[in-house]
Image (cartoon, rainbow, N blue to C red; front, side, top):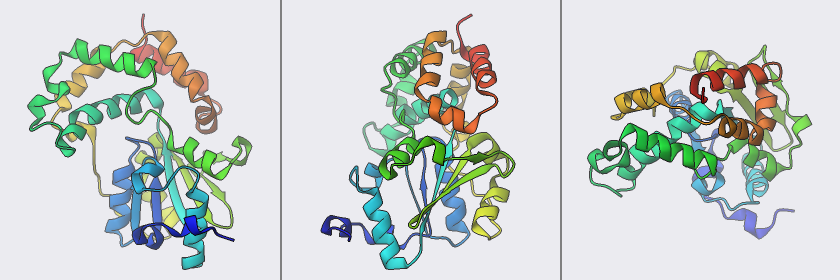
Length: 260
């Protein structure tokens, strides 16, 4: 029996073919744009609050969707290596978000423009350390918490390059960012059964701050213990997507960004 509370969802959320529910800067917009271009009704969010669903109500939303459409909602989520994702999120959070929210009048008023590279790096490291970065949380953790999914119930297939978790009311497709973006059209074609033409959106290297972004990354040095703490904090998802190469991945990031 669905409670009355479950009936209060926006009509557009109840008419989707796909919901791209994925962390900040994980190809979310490109996925939505590509599916929409190929005639699928698609929404996207980084957290439930983005689509006005209260915490604890995702299950009820899926039940309502199934009751109306007589089919499961297809949900897509993508996991990206956390340090690279957080760098990209930091720049979008302070470089384009203030413009979109009209908190500043132009790019020249954002801290991405007004701060030095060293000031930006210091701020990034502080926010990474105290986990206050925009988009720090992982969407897949939120989905698992909402649906009470146990870690052992999620299996990523490296040969197919995605995993599928399925119940009576949801088909949850989960991807690894690097392999997903490398085989974008092929993988979306595989899960949709329709040939998908890629449409890119929200790419950091095309933003107004692309040169600052490149310089920031080239000279960024993060204390090793902070990188290790991020990996410990997200170890459940890293273990899921990189089961045989966790140490290799960590060592690669330590080599690139870690303190010498």
